[in-house]
Image (cartoon, rainbow, N blue to C red):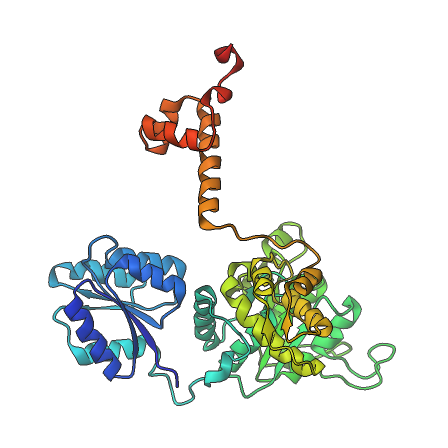
Length: 449
Protein backbone atom coordinates (compact mmCIF):
# COMPACT_ATOMS: atom_id res chain seq x y z
CA UNK A 1 0.00 0.00 0.00
CA UNK A 2 1.24 3.50 -0.85
CA UNK A 3 2.49 5.46 2.14
CA UNK A 4 0.25 8.40 3.09
CA UNK A 5 1.93 11.77 2.49
CA UNK A 6 1.94 14.42 5.22
CA UNK A 7 2.79 18.05 4.50
CA UNK A 8 4.55 19.39 7.61
CA UNK A 9 4.67 23.17 7.99
CA UNK A 10 6.83 24.68 10.75
CA UNK A 11 9.36 27.52 10.85
CA UNK A 12 11.36 25.78 13.61
CA UNK A 13 13.95 23.71 11.71
CA UNK A 14 14.77 21.45 14.67
CA UNK A 15 11.12 20.65 15.41
CA UNK A 16 10.41 20.16 11.72
CA UNK A 17 13.21 17.61 11.48
CA UNK A 18 12.08 15.81 14.65
CA UNK A 19 8.50 15.53 13.42
CA UNK A 20 9.71 14.28 10.04
CA UNK A 21 11.80 11.51 11.64
CA UNK A 22 8.92 10.39 13.87
CA UNK A 23 6.38 10.33 11.06
CA UNK A 24 8.68 8.47 8.67
CA UNK A 25 9.38 5.90 11.38
CA UNK A 26 5.62 5.30 11.62
CA UNK A 27 5.06 4.65 7.92
CA UNK A 28 4.33 8.12 6.58
CA UNK A 29 5.98 9.94 3.70
CA UNK A 30 6.80 13.52 4.70
CA UNK A 31 7.19 16.73 2.74
CA UNK A 32 8.41 19.47 5.09
CA UNK A 33 8.39 23.24 4.44
CA UNK A 34 9.19 26.24 6.62
CA UNK A 35 6.32 28.66 5.93
CA UNK A 36 2.69 28.98 4.96
CA UNK A 37 3.73 30.51 1.64
CA UNK A 38 5.91 27.49 0.86
CA UNK A 39 3.05 25.19 1.87
CA UNK A 40 0.66 26.80 -0.62
CA UNK A 41 3.29 26.50 -3.34
CA UNK A 42 3.73 22.80 -2.51
CA UNK A 43 -0.03 22.22 -2.54
CA UNK A 44 -0.12 23.60 -6.08
CA UNK A 45 2.35 20.89 -7.11
CA UNK A 46 0.93 17.82 -5.35
CA UNK A 47 -1.87 16.99 -2.95
CA UNK A 48 -0.83 15.37 0.35
CA UNK A 49 -3.11 13.15 2.40
CA UNK A 50 -3.03 15.53 5.38
CA UNK A 51 -1.41 18.78 6.53
CA UNK A 52 0.26 19.26 9.92
CA UNK A 53 1.02 22.92 10.57
CA UNK A 54 2.37 25.11 13.32
CA UNK A 55 -0.01 27.89 14.33
CA UNK A 56 2.27 30.86 14.95
CA UNK A 57 4.45 31.61 11.93
CA UNK A 58 5.54 34.80 10.20
CA UNK A 59 3.60 35.71 7.07
CA UNK A 60 0.81 33.18 6.46
CA UNK A 61 0.18 31.60 9.87
CA UNK A 62 -1.44 28.27 10.59
CA UNK A 63 -5.02 29.56 10.69
CA UNK A 64 -4.63 31.54 7.44
CA UNK A 65 -3.16 28.45 5.83
CA UNK A 66 -6.11 26.37 7.08
CA UNK A 67 -8.61 28.86 5.62
CA UNK A 68 -6.80 28.87 2.27
CA UNK A 69 -6.79 25.06 2.15
CA UNK A 70 -10.43 24.86 3.20
CA UNK A 71 -11.42 27.22 0.36
CA UNK A 72 -9.56 25.14 -2.24
CA UNK A 73 -9.83 21.59 -0.93
CA UNK A 74 -12.31 21.14 1.95
CA UNK A 75 -11.71 17.36 2.06
CA UNK A 76 -7.99 17.77 2.90
CA UNK A 77 -7.51 17.18 6.66
CA UNK A 78 -5.57 19.92 8.49
CA UNK A 79 -4.10 19.47 11.99
CA UNK A 80 -2.70 22.45 13.91
CA UNK A 81 0.04 22.46 16.54
CA UNK A 82 -0.80 25.23 19.00
CA UNK A 83 0.43 26.79 22.21
CA UNK A 84 -1.82 26.78 25.29
CA UNK A 85 -2.76 30.44 24.84
CA UNK A 86 -4.27 29.83 21.43
CA UNK A 87 -6.39 26.77 22.23
CA UNK A 88 -9.72 28.71 22.07
CA UNK A 89 -8.89 29.74 18.50
CA UNK A 90 -8.09 26.14 17.59
CA UNK A 91 -11.33 24.90 19.15
CA UNK A 92 -13.30 27.50 17.19
CA UNK A 93 -11.51 26.43 14.00
CA UNK A 94 -12.39 22.79 14.68
CA UNK A 95 -16.04 23.81 14.48
CA UNK A 96 -15.28 25.27 11.04
CA UNK A 97 -13.66 22.14 9.65
CA UNK A 98 -10.20 21.84 11.22
CA UNK A 99 -9.55 18.11 11.61
CA UNK A 100 -7.82 18.52 14.95
CA UNK A 101 -5.25 20.34 17.05
CA UNK A 102 -2.48 19.37 19.45
CA UNK A 103 -0.81 21.48 22.12
CA UNK A 104 2.94 21.95 22.34
CA UNK A 105 4.87 20.05 23.50
CA UNK A 106 2.84 17.42 21.66
CA UNK A 107 2.44 13.76 22.60
CA UNK A 108 3.96 11.64 19.81
CA UNK A 109 1.55 8.64 20.03
CA UNK A 110 -1.43 11.03 20.02
CA UNK A 111 -0.07 12.76 16.93
CA UNK A 112 0.47 9.47 15.11
CA UNK A 113 -3.05 8.29 15.98
CA UNK A 114 -4.57 11.57 14.81
CA UNK A 115 -2.70 11.42 11.50
CA UNK A 116 -3.74 7.80 10.96
CA UNK A 117 -7.34 8.80 11.39
CA UNK A 118 -6.85 11.83 9.16
CA UNK A 119 -5.40 9.71 6.36
CA UNK A 120 -8.04 7.01 6.88
CA UNK A 121 -5.52 4.31 7.74
CA UNK A 122 -7.96 2.96 10.25
CA UNK A 123 -10.77 2.01 7.87
CA UNK A 124 -12.31 -1.42 8.16
CA UNK A 125 -10.84 -4.65 6.85
CA UNK A 126 -13.06 -4.24 3.79
CA UNK A 127 -10.82 -1.36 2.73
CA UNK A 128 -11.03 -0.15 -0.85
CA UNK A 129 -8.57 -1.77 -3.21
CA UNK A 130 -5.72 0.47 -4.32
CA UNK A 131 -6.85 0.14 -7.95
CA UNK A 132 -10.25 1.76 -7.45
CA UNK A 133 -9.06 4.79 -9.44
CA UNK A 134 -6.61 3.02 -11.75
CA UNK A 135 -8.38 4.20 -14.92
CA UNK A 136 -8.03 7.86 -13.95
CA UNK A 137 -4.61 9.17 -14.94
CA UNK A 138 -3.64 12.41 -13.26
CA UNK A 139 -0.87 14.38 -11.60
CA UNK A 140 -3.15 17.40 -11.06
CA UNK A 141 -3.67 18.60 -7.47
CA UNK A 142 -7.17 19.74 -8.48
CA UNK A 143 -8.01 16.23 -9.68
CA UNK A 144 -6.44 14.65 -6.59
CA UNK A 145 -8.65 16.86 -4.42
CA UNK A 146 -11.68 15.80 -6.44
CA UNK A 147 -10.75 12.11 -6.12
CA UNK A 148 -10.35 12.48 -2.37
CA UNK A 149 -13.89 13.86 -2.18
CA UNK A 150 -15.12 11.10 -4.48
CA UNK A 151 -13.65 8.39 -2.26
CA UNK A 152 -15.29 9.89 0.82
CA UNK A 153 -18.62 10.18 -0.99
CA UNK A 154 -18.32 6.58 -2.21
CA UNK A 155 -18.60 5.29 1.35
CA UNK A 156 -22.07 6.78 1.74
CA UNK A 157 -25.37 5.94 0.08
CA UNK A 158 -26.00 9.53 -0.99
CA UNK A 159 -27.03 10.22 -4.57
CA UNK A 160 -24.22 11.90 -6.44
CA UNK A 161 -24.24 14.29 -9.41
CA UNK A 162 -21.10 14.57 -11.56
CA UNK A 163 -20.88 17.71 -13.66
CA UNK A 164 -18.38 18.74 -16.29
CA UNK A 165 -17.90 19.41 -19.96
CA UNK A 166 -18.29 16.63 -22.53
CA UNK A 167 -15.25 14.39 -22.69
CA UNK A 168 -13.93 15.07 -19.19
CA UNK A 169 -14.39 11.47 -18.01
CA UNK A 170 -17.63 11.52 -16.04
CA UNK A 171 -18.34 7.80 -16.56
CA UNK A 172 -14.77 6.88 -15.58
CA UNK A 173 -15.25 8.77 -12.33
CA UNK A 174 -18.62 7.09 -11.74
CA UNK A 175 -17.04 3.64 -12.22
CA UNK A 176 -14.26 4.58 -9.80
CA UNK A 177 -16.81 5.67 -7.19
CA UNK A 178 -18.63 2.35 -7.59
CA UNK A 179 -15.35 0.43 -7.10
CA UNK A 180 -14.64 2.45 -3.96
CA UNK A 181 -18.12 1.86 -2.50
CA UNK A 182 -19.56 -0.95 -0.36
CA UNK A 183 -21.57 -1.97 -3.47
CA UNK A 184 -18.44 -2.77 -5.52
CA UNK A 185 -19.17 -6.52 -5.61
CA UNK A 186 -22.56 -5.85 -7.22
CA UNK A 187 -23.32 -4.69 -10.80
CA UNK A 188 -22.49 -1.27 -12.23
CA UNK A 189 -24.99 -0.41 -14.97
CA UNK A 190 -24.58 2.71 -17.12
CA UNK A 191 -27.00 4.27 -19.59
CA UNK A 192 -26.84 7.46 -21.64
CA UNK A 193 -30.24 9.12 -21.30
CA UNK A 194 -29.67 11.21 -24.41
CA UNK A 195 -28.73 8.30 -26.67
CA UNK A 196 -31.98 6.33 -26.41
CA UNK A 197 -35.30 7.49 -27.94
CA UNK A 198 -37.71 8.77 -25.30
CA UNK A 199 -40.32 6.08 -26.10
CA UNK A 200 -37.78 3.31 -25.40
CA UNK A 201 -35.98 4.84 -22.43
CA UNK A 202 -38.72 3.96 -19.91
CA UNK A 203 -38.61 0.30 -20.92
CA UNK A 204 -34.79 0.26 -20.77
CA UNK A 205 -34.75 1.74 -17.29
CA UNK A 206 -37.74 0.17 -15.58
CA UNK A 207 -38.39 -2.92 -17.73
CA UNK A 208 -41.60 -4.17 -19.34
CA UNK A 209 -43.90 -7.17 -19.35
CA UNK A 210 -44.42 -9.43 -22.33
CA UNK A 211 -47.08 -7.92 -24.61
CA UNK A 212 -46.90 -4.48 -22.98
CA UNK A 213 -46.42 -2.94 -26.42
CA UNK A 214 -45.82 -4.01 -29.99
CA UNK A 215 -42.57 -5.96 -30.17
CA UNK A 216 -42.45 -6.84 -26.46
CA UNK A 217 -42.02 -10.57 -27.07
CA UNK A 218 -40.68 -11.35 -23.60
CA UNK A 219 -40.36 -9.83 -20.14
CA UNK A 220 -37.51 -7.36 -19.70
CA UNK A 221 -36.38 -6.67 -16.11
CA UNK A 222 -34.89 -3.25 -16.99
CA UNK A 223 -31.60 -1.77 -15.96
CA UNK A 224 -32.63 -0.88 -12.42
CA UNK A 225 -33.57 -4.47 -11.57
CA UNK A 226 -30.45 -5.72 -13.39
CA UNK A 227 -28.34 -3.56 -11.08
CA UNK A 228 -30.01 -4.86 -7.90
CA UNK A 229 -27.70 -4.18 -4.96
CA UNK A 230 -25.31 -2.19 -7.13
CA UNK A 231 -25.03 1.17 -8.85
CA UNK A 232 -26.97 2.76 -11.72
CA UNK A 233 -25.18 5.53 -13.61
CA UNK A 234 -27.47 7.86 -15.54
CA UNK A 235 -25.32 9.82 -17.97
CA UNK A 236 -26.69 13.03 -19.51
CA UNK A 237 -29.52 13.09 -17.00
CA UNK A 238 -30.46 16.55 -18.29
CA UNK A 239 -31.80 14.92 -21.47
CA UNK A 240 -34.32 12.73 -19.62
CA UNK A 241 -37.94 13.51 -20.65
CA UNK A 242 -40.13 15.10 -17.96
CA UNK A 243 -42.57 12.13 -17.65
CA UNK A 244 -39.66 9.80 -16.87
CA UNK A 245 -38.27 12.27 -14.35
CA UNK A 246 -41.42 11.68 -12.29
CA UNK A 247 -40.85 7.91 -12.34
CA UNK A 248 -37.17 8.32 -11.44
CA UNK A 249 -38.21 10.44 -8.49
CA UNK A 250 -40.33 7.49 -7.27
CA UNK A 251 -37.27 5.22 -7.40
CA UNK A 252 -35.34 7.69 -5.26
CA UNK A 253 -38.16 8.32 -2.81
CA UNK A 254 -39.77 4.90 -2.51
CA UNK A 255 -37.09 2.48 -3.68
CA UNK A 256 -39.41 0.79 -6.18
CA UNK A 257 -40.02 0.58 -9.94
CA UNK A 258 -43.06 -0.28 -12.06
CA UNK A 259 -42.31 -1.98 -15.40
CA UNK A 260 -44.23 -0.88 -18.48
CA UNK A 261 -47.48 -2.86 -18.60
CA UNK A 262 -47.36 -3.84 -14.90
CA UNK A 263 -49.96 -2.89 -12.30
CA UNK A 264 -47.72 -3.41 -9.26
CA UNK A 265 -44.40 -1.93 -8.24
CA UNK A 266 -41.28 -3.94 -7.44
CA UNK A 267 -38.74 -3.07 -4.74
CA UNK A 268 -35.27 -2.19 -5.98
CA UNK A 269 -32.08 -1.46 -4.06
CA UNK A 270 -29.65 0.62 -6.10
CA UNK A 271 -27.50 3.68 -5.65
CA UNK A 272 -27.96 6.31 -8.34
CA UNK A 273 -25.07 8.28 -9.77
CA UNK A 274 -25.89 10.80 -12.48
CA UNK A 275 -23.95 13.11 -14.75
CA UNK A 276 -24.55 15.99 -17.11
CA UNK A 277 -22.71 18.65 -19.07
CA UNK A 278 -25.79 20.90 -18.88
CA UNK A 279 -26.58 23.54 -16.29
CA UNK A 280 -29.53 21.89 -14.55
CA UNK A 281 -30.44 25.04 -12.65
CA UNK A 282 -31.02 26.77 -15.98
CA UNK A 283 -33.04 23.74 -17.11
CA UNK A 284 -35.20 24.06 -13.99
CA UNK A 285 -35.82 27.71 -14.79
CA UNK A 286 -36.94 26.84 -18.31
CA UNK A 287 -39.22 24.05 -17.08
CA UNK A 288 -37.14 21.26 -18.66
CA UNK A 289 -36.03 19.65 -15.41
CA UNK A 290 -37.88 19.01 -12.16
CA UNK A 291 -36.55 20.94 -9.18
CA UNK A 292 -37.49 18.20 -6.68
CA UNK A 293 -35.59 15.61 -8.74
CA UNK A 294 -32.57 17.89 -8.99
CA UNK A 295 -32.26 18.14 -5.21
CA UNK A 296 -32.70 14.37 -4.87
CA UNK A 297 -29.91 13.70 -7.37
CA UNK A 298 -27.60 16.50 -6.24
CA UNK A 299 -26.97 15.43 -2.65
CA UNK A 300 -23.23 15.33 -3.36
CA UNK A 301 -21.88 17.32 -6.28
CA UNK A 302 -18.54 16.72 -8.01
CA UNK A 303 -17.32 19.08 -10.75
CA UNK A 304 -14.76 17.61 -13.15
CA UNK A 305 -12.29 20.24 -14.38
CA UNK A 306 -11.79 20.59 -18.15
CA UNK A 307 -8.49 19.43 -19.61
CA UNK A 308 -7.31 23.02 -20.18
CA UNK A 309 -7.38 23.49 -16.39
CA UNK A 310 -5.22 20.39 -15.75
CA UNK A 311 -2.55 20.82 -18.42
CA UNK A 312 0.00 18.97 -16.30
CA UNK A 313 -1.99 15.83 -17.12
CA UNK A 314 -1.69 16.21 -20.90
CA UNK A 315 1.76 14.55 -21.24
CA UNK A 316 0.66 11.68 -18.97
CA UNK A 317 -2.57 11.12 -20.87
CA UNK A 318 -0.80 11.45 -24.22
CA UNK A 319 1.74 8.76 -23.30
CA UNK A 320 -1.02 6.51 -21.96
CA UNK A 321 -3.03 6.80 -25.17
CA UNK A 322 0.11 6.36 -27.26
CA UNK A 323 0.86 3.04 -25.54
CA UNK A 324 -2.74 1.91 -25.98
CA UNK A 325 -3.01 2.97 -29.63
CA UNK A 326 0.35 1.63 -30.81
CA UNK A 327 -0.74 -1.79 -29.56
CA UNK A 328 -4.10 -1.39 -31.33
CA UNK A 329 -2.50 -0.44 -34.67
CA UNK A 330 0.66 -2.53 -34.24
CA UNK A 331 2.85 0.52 -34.77
CA UNK A 332 6.35 1.12 -33.40
CA UNK A 333 5.87 4.70 -32.31
CA UNK A 334 7.83 5.39 -29.16
CA UNK A 335 7.14 8.99 -28.31
CA UNK A 336 6.61 12.61 -29.36
CA UNK A 337 8.84 15.22 -30.96
CA UNK A 338 9.33 18.23 -28.64
CA UNK A 339 7.23 20.52 -30.85
CA UNK A 340 4.45 17.91 -30.88
CA UNK A 341 4.30 17.86 -27.08
CA UNK A 342 4.34 21.67 -27.01
CA UNK A 343 1.33 21.75 -29.35
CA UNK A 344 -0.55 19.20 -27.28
CA UNK A 345 0.16 21.13 -24.08
CA UNK A 346 -0.92 24.48 -25.58
CA UNK A 347 -4.14 23.39 -27.34
CA UNK A 348 -7.51 24.52 -25.94
CA UNK A 349 -9.12 21.03 -26.05
CA UNK A 350 -12.82 21.97 -26.21
CA UNK A 351 -13.56 18.23 -26.48
CA UNK A 352 -11.32 17.49 -23.49
CA UNK A 353 -9.85 14.01 -22.95
CA UNK A 354 -12.03 12.42 -25.63
CA UNK A 355 -10.68 14.90 -28.18
CA UNK A 356 -7.09 14.28 -27.04
CA UNK A 357 -7.50 10.56 -27.62
CA UNK A 358 -9.02 11.12 -31.07
CA UNK A 359 -6.16 13.43 -32.06
CA UNK A 360 -3.60 10.86 -30.94
CA UNK A 361 -5.42 8.05 -32.71
CA UNK A 362 -5.18 9.97 -35.97
CA UNK A 363 -1.50 10.70 -35.35
CA UNK A 364 -0.66 7.07 -34.62
CA UNK A 365 -2.64 5.84 -37.63
CA UNK A 366 -0.74 8.16 -39.98
CA UNK A 367 2.69 8.18 -38.35
CA UNK A 368 5.56 6.58 -40.30
CA UNK A 369 8.39 7.56 -37.94
CA UNK A 370 9.44 6.41 -34.46
CA UNK A 371 8.25 9.72 -32.98
CA UNK A 372 5.11 11.71 -33.70
CA UNK A 373 6.10 15.02 -35.35
CA UNK A 374 4.48 18.36 -34.67
CA UNK A 375 3.15 18.52 -38.23
CA UNK A 376 0.90 15.51 -37.60
CA UNK A 377 -0.41 17.00 -34.36
CA UNK A 378 -1.12 20.33 -36.08
CA UNK A 379 -2.97 18.51 -38.86
CA UNK A 380 -5.06 16.51 -36.37
CA UNK A 381 -5.90 19.64 -34.39
CA UNK A 382 -6.91 21.41 -37.63
CA UNK A 383 -6.01 24.75 -36.18
CA UNK A 384 -2.97 26.75 -35.28
CA UNK A 385 -2.26 25.89 -31.66
CA UNK A 386 -2.08 28.63 -29.13
CA UNK A 387 1.47 29.62 -28.31
CA UNK A 388 2.67 29.84 -24.74
CA UNK A 389 4.26 33.26 -24.26
CA UNK A 390 7.59 33.60 -22.48
CA UNK A 391 7.12 35.04 -18.99
CA UNK A 392 8.76 38.37 -19.89
CA UNK A 393 6.41 38.86 -22.85
CA UNK A 394 3.33 37.90 -20.85
CA UNK A 395 4.31 40.28 -18.03
CA UNK A 396 4.96 43.13 -20.49
CA UNK A 397 1.61 42.56 -22.22
CA UNK A 398 -0.24 42.60 -18.91
CA UNK A 399 1.63 45.72 -17.76
CA UNK A 400 0.84 47.56 -21.02
CA UNK A 401 -2.86 46.62 -20.95
CA UNK A 402 -3.07 47.58 -17.27
CA UNK A 403 -1.57 51.02 -17.92
CA UNK A 404 -3.86 51.60 -20.90
CA UNK A 405 -6.93 50.77 -18.82
CA UNK A 406 -5.86 53.23 -16.10
CA UNK A 407 -5.07 55.95 -18.65
CA UNK A 408 -8.55 55.51 -20.15
CA UNK A 409 -10.14 55.58 -16.71
CA UNK A 410 -8.31 58.76 -15.64
CA UNK A 411 -8.35 60.44 -19.08
CA UNK A 412 -4.58 60.55 -19.13
CA UNK A 413 -4.07 62.09 -15.67
CA UNK A 414 -0.71 60.60 -14.63
CA UNK A 415 -1.11 61.62 -10.99
CA UNK A 416 -4.38 59.64 -10.82
CA UNK A 417 -2.78 56.66 -12.57
CA UNK A 418 0.00 56.71 -9.98
CA UNK A 419 -2.51 56.87 -7.11
CA UNK A 420 -4.62 53.98 -8.44
CA UNK A 421 -1.55 51.86 -9.20
CA UNK A 422 0.03 52.55 -5.82
CA UNK A 423 3.23 53.89 -7.45
CA UNK A 424 4.92 57.29 -7.56
CA UNK A 425 4.69 59.58 -10.61
CA UNK A 426 8.34 59.08 -11.58
CA UNK A 427 7.92 55.30 -11.76
CA UNK A 428 4.69 55.64 -13.74
CA UNK A 429 6.34 57.99 -16.26
CA UNK A 430 9.16 55.46 -16.65
CA UNK A 431 6.66 52.65 -17.31
CA UNK A 432 4.71 54.75 -19.81
CA UNK A 433 7.92 55.55 -21.67
CA UNK A 434 8.92 51.87 -21.71
CA UNK A 435 5.63 50.93 -23.37
CA UNK A 436 5.48 53.96 -25.69
CA UNK A 437 2.31 55.31 -24.10
CA UNK A 438 1.57 59.07 -24.32
CA UNK A 439 -0.88 60.31 -21.65
CA UNK A 440 -2.04 63.20 -23.84
CA UNK A 441 -3.57 60.74 -26.31
CA UNK A 442 -6.05 59.65 -23.63
CA UNK A 443 -7.22 63.16 -22.71
CA UNK A 444 -10.44 64.71 -24.01
CA UNK A 445 -10.13 66.63 -27.30
CA UNK A 446 -10.98 69.94 -25.74
CA UNK A 447 -8.21 69.40 -23.17
CA UNK A 448 -5.60 68.77 -25.87
CA UNK A 449 -6.74 71.53 -28.27
